[in-house]
Length: 207
Image 1 (tube, helix red, strand yellow):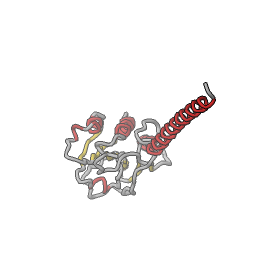
Image 2 (cartoon, one colour):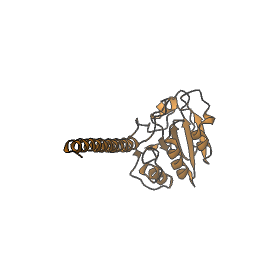
Image 3 (cartoon, one colour):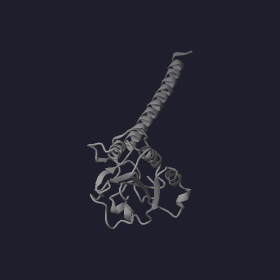
Image 4 (tube, rainbow, N blue to C red):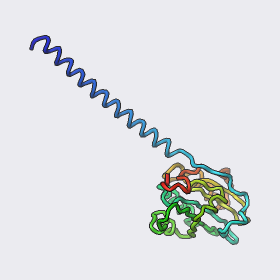
């Protein structure tokens, strides 16, 4: 092959190799950025507002008589609800003198009975499901993020406010769940709040 032709062939192969390398680098950067976004998303906390220190007198929710009351606020379409309800089931397993209210904030006209989160919550023994159509109860208890829990003792005093999952959609031991379990067991706990990981209540898209 003439030297000129060899030079052209070498140049063509080199250009092709450079394009391939650039493509691989672009793919790797995109994958890395995707993993970074996912990790950040899973650990991004939702909004919270201070819950009332005493059970609010104007609430239509009925506190337990002679026992503790746990209120969980949920967005019916939030994909994180499955993990939150899983942790709730762990908390309620064997719990005594506890009233557990799961409060749903509807976002559209779809019947709640068609939502997975509604049926999952209904299947957990010891829960009472409540519909908060105008979001008044959520605001009254300072709940702005799906997964927010408030726990009041038998005297109506706030003992815990926050989430019961370790991150978005994550099931497993975490400080929020452990704090509620300790309170139910009569044990001292230094955790009286925890980050909430979930969708904004009232957001139609559940994101």
